[in-house]
Amino acid sequence: MREEARQTALRGTAAESGLLAVTLGLRLLGFGPVLILALLIVAASVGVPNFLKPINLGNILAQTAVIAIVAMGQQMVILTRGIDLSVGSNLALATVVGGLVYQAGGGGLAVIFAMLAAGMAVGAINGLVYVYGRLPHPFIITLAMLSICRGLALELAPGHTTMRGMPEAVKFLGGQTTLGVPNAFFVVVVVALLILMLTYAMVWGRWTYAVGGDPVAAREMGIPVRGVLISTYVFSGLCAGIGAVVLSGRTGASSPIYGNLLELDTIAAVIIGGASFLGGRGHLGHALIGAVMIGVIRNALNLLNVDIYFQMIAIGGVIVLAVEADVLRNRLEARARVLQAAKT
Image (cartoon, rainbow, N blue to C red; front, side, top):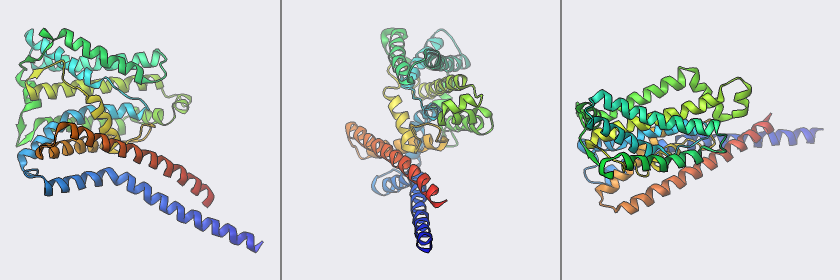
């Protein structure tokens, strides 16, 4: 009996030590994206000329704004175990719709409303077809809408090319500054505050996490799973529309070729920031950290005159590391559950 008790005590001690090590590893992975971003900024500050100049920091904020806005919408979709591959083409179509409204004599509010409505309409189609079409995964419909939206944008744009001109209100939001800070940054802040309100102050946020965590259990709890899923795609479309406003304001134009590969940038931002493809886990900071990380890498490489193709390779490498970190995190969480059971 004494020997058995001793062995039990030893197993408990080993489980406790292992649990401590696993918990430490999980915490390091949780803070990993922030630490990597800090290291990137320090390295760029030391090794890249002019990186810390106010004008360059302003450029980073302006260049990152569109990715950050659209990535926040992508974050909500990924929370539900989904994905939205149409955001880049959706943004392009929204800019073309806004450009057409402007050419027809529409003012600033009309152009902005047209872009937002176009983005939300595409998001609604994604959500409705996915849910009521009983598709196995949103990859299918959003991939189809990627092609459809790009084709519509090219067809609707006069001459299938860029349309110059935007109202002053749009230029103010996307292309001008206030107290030296790009107005696009303030748009990012407003969208972030909206998401914080939706996810933490309203029941919709808890429903979104529940659906992403376990859709079957969420349905059994009485949560309107279909409505939640559709609403996340509508919100992703809204963010694409807001991104269209910012990009059109920054360039003073609308174009069917805008947003090329934006879907990959936004997915990369969410995953690099620390969110999980498994759903039910993630927060606003993940999308923002990932977007800033991509912006810092691209800006630093541009200042160093690194070829664009090598920039793509660098971003791809970071994505691979981020996915592997997510896999490691899932394994450590599973190990922690085993050790917790052994401890008790």
